[in-house]
Structure formats: structure tokens, C-alpha cells
Length: 421
Image 1 (cartoon, rainbow, N blue to C red):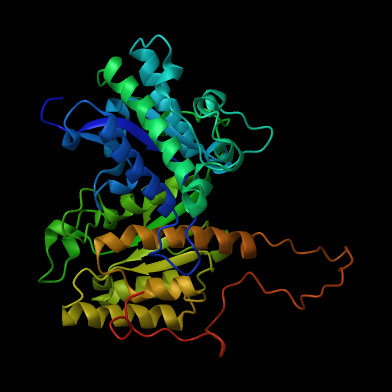
Image 2: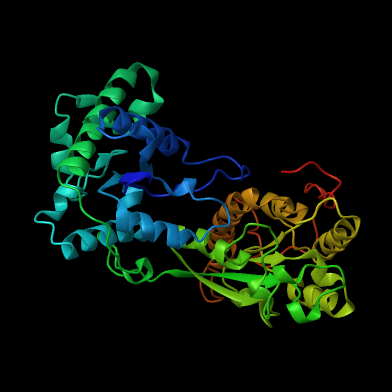
């Protein structure tokens, strides 16, 4: 590909759950650091211009881009596939589908031994029963690095005394990638739709549903002064930030899918029995409550909202007084409805003001919604005929949402009156 950056390798890994309470923290910082080190090592060994040589790492996809499109293009062009094997990698469907997409591409391209195009990394120790494809060969490549085989590469990266062993392994991996990419290149070709591909390591999973609802005006019901290019015939088409290629709801769905959910997108709805709701988030445009009808719809929808459905306010013009006024109204509606029972929900109610902050916040809310659902919605209530066992925990909490914050729960400040989370 003359004049273009060459994707020598595609880095595949299992995304880690964010740390509770720290939505902007990068839970995969060690993966990012390893990627940078591997790219640098590949460039040192490669024969071509270093500025035209790269790897693919999904965290480098620009915010608001067509994420799945970028992923498919990388899978269709990369010379080598580098999976970071861990327990999570082999028990989560998404990385197994990336693996299967690349494998199918190699097979369809007529590569004689498709397995040779994989350069696996033992990222963290596996269980005794886990022996993924290519692992034995990968360990044989660095047979003299016993610390690597025992602890995995992430431990060598994190612990300073093992830095030399880490660099040795990275260097050997880079050499292997360069040999494959330069001595037997494979031309770009189409890959299957990743949504339709079965994981290489799991049976077809029954994915849990994660619901993403949008409370935003439609293009035909806009208040004067709003940019119609940000809206569509349905509120699910809302794109509040400049530079967005996809609607905000689709961006949120992509985040949920990485955590093995089946994302369902809809407009804001009122559910007769809140306890029948699945985990989810509600994306709220402050201008949705600019008229009486929108305000009434939002109030009805968040009344008795369960703890596992988390509102997320989007403040796309934080310097606009009218937007801030409406954001304050949304915050008050959520507070009065008791819809902010957790730290994550209170941070989300303060509002996301930049596109770059949206994905980290959604990632935090997806994990928090699932945590709340498992803790409260699936609590087993003993039948009247079964004896109650004594408990040291005291009276169990109801899985009904709390009506309002208690005195131990700090009341959140309205948007614009507290520093950004």
C-alpha cells in the first residue's frame, strides 16, 4: 500500500471492566502500553519506512467514528493477528469473534497454513483446562523466558525487575510479525460481518439484553435555535456532538456489545411494571424538556425507575445558558423521582460535555447497570412455605428503587454547579 500506513498486526484483547467510581480511568492501560512497545519494536525490525508501519488497536479509533467499520477494515487488511490470551479472552464472545473473522479471511484467501498468521501472547495465566490455538508454539518461541510462561506478559510489564524479560519477549514477537508480514504478505480481502460470526472459543452465546433509550426531540419538533442537523425523524438518530459519524445511541450500543450484551435501541418509553425492565441507560437531551409534553414524558418514564436503568444527561453546549437551565430541570426531575441512587447515576446526571468523555462514561454505566441488576433484580425471595434462614446481614434491601436519597447519600449538585466527574 504505497504512501499509506501498513497494519502489520491486529491486536485483539478482552476489555476489562472499569473501576467502580472512576469512569475516566483506563482499565486497559497495560494493554495500551504493550501495544505502543510492540509497534515500536516492529518498526525497528521492519525494512520499510517506519512512519508507514503500524498496528491496529481499537482504543485508537477516533471518538464518534464508525467503530465497527474501522474494526472490519483493520481485520481485512492486517497481516498478522495478535491475540492476548487470558481467561477473559477465552470466556468472552467478542474477542473470539475477532479471532474467527481473521481466521476465515486467511482461509478464504487460500493461505496454506492460516494458523501461522497468528502470533499469540500469554497475557495472564490460564486455567489448566484452557489451551487455545497456537499457545504452545507461542511459548516455545520464548522457551528460555520461564517467567513469561509462569506469569504472563502483563505481569512482566507491570513489575520492574522483570523489565528485561518483558523487552525480550516483545522483541521476539516483533521479529515474528515482521517475518510474516514481509516475507509472505497477504493482500487485503473482505471479512465476515462480526455480528454474524460465532466465537472460536465459545458456543453461540445467549447474550443478555442491554436497552439504550433516547430522550431527544425529533427534527420535526425542534425548538427555535437548535441545529436540525443533530436530529432525525426518530430521537434514536440524535447526534449532539460535531464530528459524529453515528447516532449517539449506536455509539453506546457498540460499548455494550464489547461487554457481551445484545444492545437494543429505542426511544424513551414508560414501562407499566418497572421491575420487568432489562439493564440499560437513558440518553437525555436537556432540550427534550423544553416543552410541557417532553417534561411530562420524562417524568412518567423515570417514575419508579429501577436501579439498573441509569439516566445519562448530554450537555453538548455547556456554555449556553438556556441549555444549562434545561439541564438543571432534568436533574431536578431525576432527583425528585429518586432515579439517582448510586454514585454512577449521580455522576451521569451531571452530564457529559465532550464526545471524548462519552464512551468512558457509558462503559462505567454498562458495568454498573449489570451490577445493580444482578444484585437487586435477581434476588431470590423465599416462598411463604420455606423457612427463613437467620442472617447476619440484617434486613435485605428491597429490589425496588429508593424513593429519594437518604441522609447518608449525598444529594448531587445540579449540572453546572459541580466540577466535572
